[in-house]
Image (cartoon, rainbow, N blue to C red):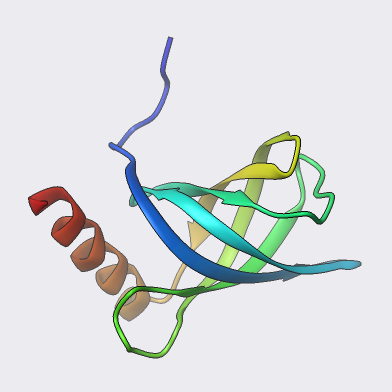
Length: 103
């Protein structure tokens, strides 16, 4: 059973992430207002907490996620749940997802 709270949309955005004893760059392959999937060669463990920057398709400055939790991992990919963002960044995320939803 799918437990996602919001729909996911395909994207291709570069992300930079860091946490305790880990930092890396990856490619976000899907996005929702609650989280995303990231492909990366770095090994990330489930339960890790990360800060990240998302370089969205628009030529704006990167969107910052203050706190995200790694909820699952697979070969060269992991899933993140967004836990904490500044209100203006959260609004940017919602606007970006709305453009994806509109197609």
